[in-house]
Length: 451
Image (cartoon, rainbow, N blue to C red):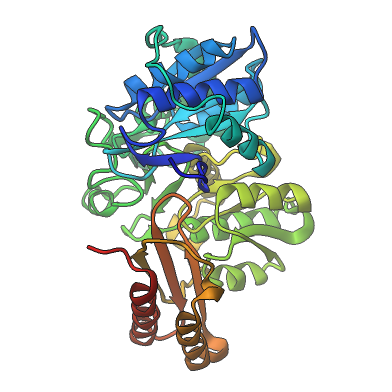
């Protein structure tokens, strides 16, 4: 077991190892229930469709019952759906079994408080204290998997419909939308949503079998969606990730529009409508500088945050903003959606802009001219502070001097995997690729994991 149990997005790792065993899940349910719940309260559960979800849900439910709570299961449902249901109901907490965009052999547990937010550092520390003490893994869970409650999915679907009101009539009758569900959680609601809205849509990769989630599809592998948009002359492609909390888009030409492009479309539209408080949006340090340039044209500034949707949410609340997100496609519409990032809500918001303006996505996203950016992932054996690696720092400084004011270098550790991420941005792709490789090489020398 590790002393730092929660990463940037809950507990995550290889299913069947560490806390992601039946006994570990029981301990997590027990600890989360004791910290966030109360005897007799209700707790909500959901999952993204991995084969390991069954016994992890059973373990969590057993732990919740041991803490005096009553588990209620939504079954296959996007993470934002569980967060919204927890926030809008009388539930004391929600536990989502998901590893998001990771492959099927991984899994994870995301924890939500009664407000639908992820626990802050202090609450996570209290849960971790119990997990390494009184609630350490013990006997195997008992009590079975709770029966799925279809009313929970219906309630979330009703919530989604409120964001797509009038779309069926407003969009061109011959416009087709293609939706890649990544064989994940979105498969349970996306087909129902488009039918209910009267939007001409077809869902791809919407048949999860426990092993195919994110396999060659979804937001991390959008190539097949791009090809389908071009072949079928569709008006828009939407690629969800495995648990549906983010999306990237494909315009009518088959070109990708990532999270920064989506923030450009929504931020400029909100600014033109006078609906952007503080004349600012929140975005992480990983966002491309092209986002800053495109929004500055509408006198909108970017408030930079640390990586992770929780950091974005904190900035939105601190500065009173209504829009923020990450380049990966995790977009948060502030208070309007309870500070919950939802890939389907994001897609609906962009479709509303398209319907209102009559413009294709390629035109709306055109102000975002992405600067070349190279991102390298370096497997590492440990995660010491970068400032304690002088040879790495020397290489970073050399890269920054070579780029001058035209680019930047950013180092960070993954919060969910044993990886160091090297990002170099600048106008010359060949140059930044060489600089990124030099920095990555130093990291491999110092802390690289053995093959």
